[in-house]
Image (cartoon, rainbow, N blue to C red):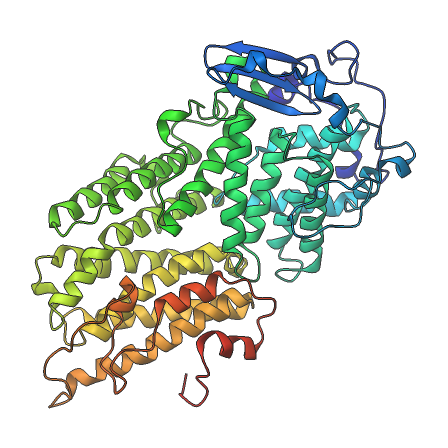
Length: 593
């Protein structure tokens, strides 16, 4: 409540979350307690320029905010009011919508929706009880993954939008409505009362994008616009089909827009209200999270370095809380990416990477470390699982190349390699922990968490090295335990695919089954009296996992092609039908998998 009052967002309970009223009031008089800038319908803090040592900052309700660095000759550029003829004029929602039907920018860029007015888009909000449920589901089921907006800030915006107490411009109202639709679209994905990936969730997502187009988000970037883009990425991450390529582009766009709008500079320097400052900080750090995940996934250095932004973490978040330490992991990941991109055969470089990851875990407060016996609430336990998955997938990443070399140079017994420490870190530590964490997630908290696709991707990241060791080194002292873990991980993947049918799981499960079948066949060879291959053949060149999962077979090289798998996952497919799966992986009918 205090945060909402600071931002001028406090108002009586909005009708959309009140059972006593189902009427959507879209316009009304300005709240008396707000201080509006003369001649505008915007709060005073949203109409003005801020000068600082780091550059020129302009903020208003229509255009959002705009930042120009100190060396950008900002004083020579035209003032914002000189560009007013380029801006769609504001109008209240309750007016005649016919003049608002214009060809706004829509997103994604390659599609164009029918041009609706804000009035028409606002009428698509669900009825009050349903709206309240979707908002509650979002804040109950998703903050352990991402938290681009706080509940207090969101409720304050929702008050303004649905209570009729907002005299904001069309641009600002559209951005706020985009954020509301974006949040309930993600909430709908995790609502156990409807099927996974329902048409309802997709319709809310499209409405969010449409409102972003009306808000001209490319040139009028605001907190609500950036939160909406982040929520759209969250929707795509958990979609029923791979959308990784789109996420990569959208995160890059959001990062550029946030920088243009000055979100990389701490909002306190501009004298903004405390709630707005914290909202800007929060979305900046959450966009950084997505950007670093993408950089890691695509083998790139992060586009934004730590020395070019000074945005603090939100003051409404504890320095020993979950978000602070998740963002600290983002910093660790940033360091890890830079170290891993410097290839080295020196085992000391692996120890350096390992030290980076383990230092994070040693500094993590005990109340954020996962324990099998819960000593906190549901949300706290889920947050502990998230951080533990970060730590163990980090171990996998920093030991991956060293583990590969151990399999290559000591295929009969990788534990005899000088890189045995990496083998132990992967097979005895990281992989068992990841599988146990996902097992706890599904078993203790319900199969609704199979809708979090990222958990399954973490699970698959543990399955691959387990299969690699069994297939490459079936006589190793680690092969039997690795095989048992592999089957346990595959069973969890099957469980997730049954609970949440989608193309994501069809892809992962097909790959996992084929690897498990070959690993089982290879493990059986350890008991034969005579091997067909007395010495290892020459290792093929190619991707790391392709090399790790090389199999002795009549065809020479195992047909598990990691590059093909990766391409198939990232290629957006329309329907998860059986024939499309055969087209991706080749016709494997009749091979027993």
